[in-house]
Length: 354
Image 1 (cartoon, rainbow, N blue to C red):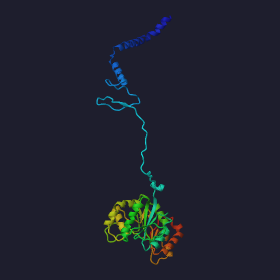
Image 2: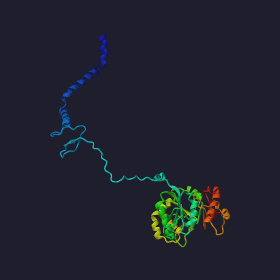
Image 3: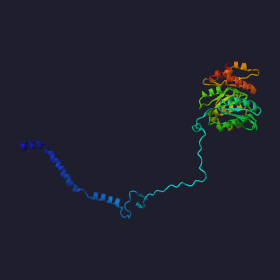
Image 4: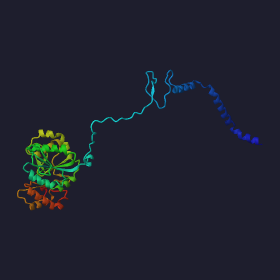
């Protein structure tokens, strides 16, 4: 009974078992029919790797060795083992070179100051008007102030940075001054203010105006004037009330400065510079820019301090001309009294707008 049940269970899987057994049997029989050439080739290659190339006396390389090359027949010439060579520091001639580092972190990082002031003076006014201007501006500008003069004077006032060009002609003096700024100060400041020593400048209002102007702006700002007897289109900035030049505009003008010196003929330095800027930088003098006005007050011969105060002095950026150092000091004192009123003004009205 049990045998009959076992046979009934195996009968459905019988063909499968027979097929598997037959497959294994045939695979074992086919091994003997395979060509033995593959085995011999593989064994020969392995022996060649371990022993060397056939016909060569060179044996197998060590794992740490490096092949030095091959012959014309493609055989390895020889092997060598790497060696560690100690590093001998070469003898240094003379003292070691010092690495240059900027004096200030702002210079190394490319951070510039906002404003640099250039005052044009002369031998006759150096010890009077220039000294008064220095007392008015220097402590407000943290020393970012320079004086340009036409002739060399052996007796210079103390506490003033003076550059003497040695040429009494106004236009060459302006040319040398601009070139000096490009060579020595252009990398450190964003805005350059040009003014004469007979002009009073309110430093806080000037700094407020500059603080609202972009550092990358190309701008020529001051009191516009028409060219006399010339065909130049545009207007230049009068040097009397002073004018502002941006660093970007001076850099654009730099390649053509020498050409301006030889090609442009003028007896007025401010007009010469205006022609140069218009011809080679394409910029004309403007009095207003995006709501910011360049304010100036023109002095009359009989104008006194009370009249000045009523004539727009509280909003004035510059006052011109100031004929004496005493009057300049009095003007400075008046500005200090009205500083709380005027220093916060950003938009200032010129005399023509009053």
